[in-house]
Structures are given as C-alpha cells and as structure tokens.
Length: 172
Image (tube, rainbow, N blue to C red; front, side):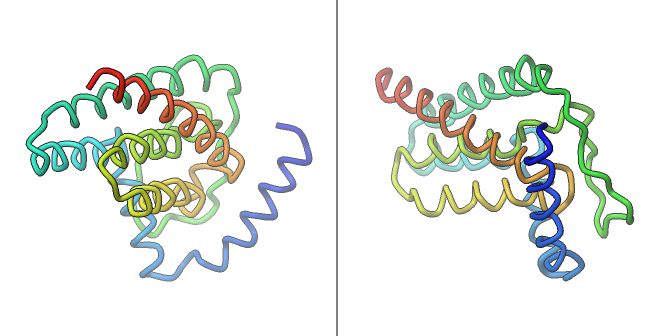
C-alpha cells in the first residue's frame, strides 16, 4: 500500500487503541468477528429470515451471494494485493482464528455488506447495515485488518451486494 495509506492506517489504529482493553467492548467486537467467520452469522440469519418469511429462496439467495463473494474476494482479489496483516504485539484478550490470506480487502467486511444488502430486501435496512458495520469494524478492533482493508471490503461488498440484490430481485 502507498505510504499515505499506511500512515492513515497507523493513525486510525492509534486512535482505536483507546477502545481496546475494555472488557465489554472487547467482548462485543471479538464475538462479532468470530461469529462472522465463514459467514456463519449471515447464513444463520438468512435461514432465520427464510423461516419467518416462509420462503426458503431468501436463504438460498443469500447463501449464493455469499458464496460468489467469498470465491471472488478470497481468491483472485486478495491474491492481487498480498498485503500483510497488522502486527499483534500483545496477546489477544480472547482467541480468534488467524487468517492466512492477504489482509486487503477484508472478507468479513465484504461479506457483511453483501449480507446486509440481501437481508434488507425484506426491510430493516438500518439494523442489517448496523450489524454489518459492527462486524466490519470488529476486524480493526481485533487487529486482524488495517482500516483501509476494511474500507476496501466495504466498497467491494457494497458493489457485490448491489449486483446480488438486483439479480435476486429479478429472479424472484
């Protein structure tokens, strides 16, 4: 990444440091980060929404969109950047899976935006996008991503989510 982006990431990480170490805040962000591993959170919410709506296509469309997002972001997109992850000097207060892929862009942030786009097809935009924002920013809090990785994931996910939503709307 260009030096200016690295400097911005460092400044944002330094500012975020004030939130780290608070047991309640740590628990919230670590739980959000872990729950979204492999998009388990999003698939679970999709199944729940499908049950409530009595429409299995809701869960199928979400899972298909998340599958495409994962293949694209975690495959060719991340392989183009090969960015190292933030340095974690101190032990984490809670255990997390340490990804082996490139740091840029954040797959959690991208998947969160795709999920929010798909889940909000039935309303509740603010709630879905707030949860997506929590998951995305959790990756900064737990020091698995730089802020610019999360921003990149949000942009990629917003684009993919828009396409997925339009495709799903056209097919249903």
